[in-house]
Amino acid sequence: MHRLSFILVLALSACFSCAGPAHAPEDYESILAFLFEHMADEDDAQLVAAVENLEAWLQDSDQISEALFGFQIDPRADSAVDGVDEVDRDASNLLGLSFARKSPHLTATLAETLTAANYSDIAKEYSPAVKTHEQWFTPEDTGCFATKECTWIEADNQVTSTWDFLGDAVTTERLQYRWIETTLGWVFLRRSWLLEPSPNSGVDLLAQYQMNVIMPQAGLTNAAVDPGVMGVASGLQEGATEVFEELQTVLCGPGALRLEAHWMKIEYIIPLTDEYALELAMTSAKSNAEALDAWILAEEGAPPAAATGTDDTVCE
Image (cartoon, rainbow, N blue to C red; front, top):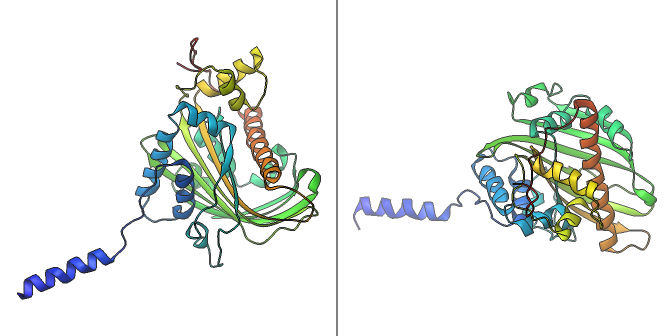
C-alpha cells in the first residue's frame, strides 16, 4: 500500500471512531430531555435545532392541546442527568410530568423576573406556598443577563415551602439559565436539580430535575374551538363564555409559550400512588406558573391585546 493511501486510511478510521456532535431529536419528550442534558454545551447549534423541532411539534393542534393539559412523561437515560455536576446520578425510578402554558408576558419579561437579583423577595410575594427563599446568583449582578450582554448565569437556592397536606419541606437546588438565539427569536432556557434529598412528613423527595423552555409566541393559530380543547387548555371542565374569552385572550395575544418538564424520584412514607403524586406535582407547578404571570401583571400592567378569532378557530 502506498504511504499516502495508508495515511488516508488511518485518518478515515480515526474519523469513524470519533463520536460526532449530539443530534437534536424531534419528539417532545426526547427534546426536553436533550435540552436538559446538553444545556451547558459550548456550541448551541443543537440546542437551537432542538428548540426549533419543539416549536414544529407544537404546530399540531392535538399535540399543543395535550401539552396545555399536561401529561406524564417517561424517565430518561442516565446520561441525561449524570453529567450535571460531580455527583454520580442515575435516572432509575424517576417519575416525569410536563405541561405547556401560554403566558401573556414577553419572554424577556419572564426571564428578567426569574433572574432578578431580588428574586427571593419576588418568589415569596407571588407564591403562597413559599415560606422562606434564599437564592445566590453567579454573577451576583444579573443585569447582564437581562440585556443579553451575558447569556449564561447560575444560582443556588434554599427554599422552605408547603406541600399541600404533606407539610413543609426544605429543598436545596442548583439552577442554570441560558439564552439562545433561534429563528423564533431569543429563547430562554432554565434547568435545575436537587442538590440533596428533601425529607418530608409524607414523602421523601430523593431527586428532582426540571427543564423550562420559554419561547416567544405571537399567538397560537391552530387550536380548534372545541369543548375538549377548551377544557384541557383552560384546566376547567365547563366552558363558560367568560372563561372562553379569557382563554382566547391568553392564547391569541402575543406573549411567551412556557414549557416545563419535571422528573422526580419519590419515596413514600404515607400510602400514595404515583399517579396521585404526579397530580399533586402538576397542580403545584401549574399554580406556580399562573401565580408568576399574575404577579407580573400586577407589576407591569395589562398584557397586549389579543388577536380576533373566528367561528372555527381560537385564533386567526
